[in-house]
Amino acid sequence: MRYFPLSVALAAFPIFFAATPLLSPATAQQARPPTFAVCAGCHSTQAGKTVFGPSLAGVGGRRAGSLEGYTYSPAVKASGLTWNTKTLDRWLTDPKKTVPGTKMPFNGIQDRKVREQVIAYLLTL
Image (cartoon, rainbow, N blue to C red; front, side, top):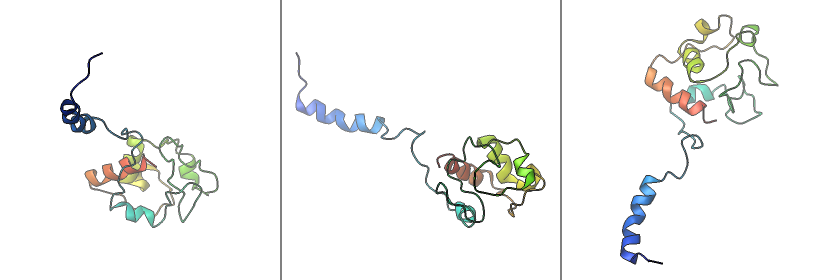
């Protein structure tokens, strides 16, 4: 068996860790964007905690209007939406246009980059 000199192993150590993510993108929680403060006024990110709006914990992949314990508008319940990048983008651009009759009192996020940050964060919850 052949051994590498300690100096070679120590030299390779930083390269290995720089190229090896400690958390995969799928499991790493995105940093909460500052704009999310507007959302947090009505929505919790804690599972089972409803504030004025439903909890956003686990929102990615969830069917709109389906969270137990929250009374949604008939429009949202009948929307047929499942929350993913595309539907969240439409919704956060203009909720009232996306689902006419929603009771969500929010005019949307017009800045595309800011909206993308919020969506990326939501999908980690």
